[in-house]
Length: 379
Image (cartoon, rainbow, N blue to C red; front, side, top):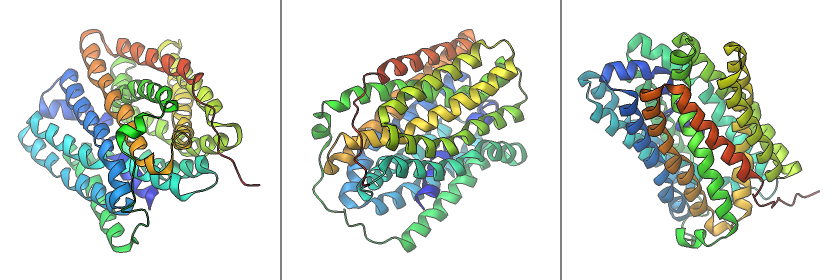
């Protein structure tokens, strides 16, 4: 159930990239405009996690997940009005409301997993990621076909309805969470944990390249590599598909070798993938290398980073800590979307991707300074 919830939570935010051209034409806006709107929504998606983590500790994770799924799904209905009127502000409002309610999910689910498993937390995080990624894999391609046939707003509404259905299913089947009502640590208490600061800065660097790549990769392929829009959407789907085995492998490897070693290896793969995309002489080969190297490495790093974060803080502060981390990655990191859009309008998306590669190199450098805490596994 968490895998399905994870999938739909991410699906809402990988709908726009493959149909960005249709959205910009329908709303008559530029890349800079879309970058500003998406950055605002992403920032809300991040900052809302500061509420979601502690809220899950307070009222229970299941209740928080129901609220997140249901109301983020309802918000997609506004996309129909945005499509009918062509008003960017309605699109922005819909995206912001989707992000606000969806933001409650990640810190809640990660905290629940870290509290529920006494052994192999990294692998459990990876399995949760696999469940989420399996559903997300098809989203860009499905979204493109729905948008091409029925109009871009219906791509959002389709996944919104699925979120509402899953929220109802949760409400009918969940049992009262045993953690609800327990004393929870606050945000300020979480920030006093010194080991988390290097992780926080690393997380910001990851967010800065992640959010830009996520939004503009299909558009980059269409405009700078002259790839057909359908194949650009499929390429984005393949990046996500690499995340299915990567989530499990990354979690398993973190349990065996330690999270820091996995994060160094995956950060290296991310940098090599971006460099291949930008500089490999044969574009088709460079794109293929990017899909495999970036797609696998990016998703393999997630369970390792999530479990390492949990190891560095006590259980009663994990909701708050995961909220802070989600905010730094998705909130602060979203700044790169407006910067990338602005650079793309002025100089082309090649320049924007040069900057995103620099952020990835910064993350690689920081990975060598991460703490080396590991989970103690039972024999």
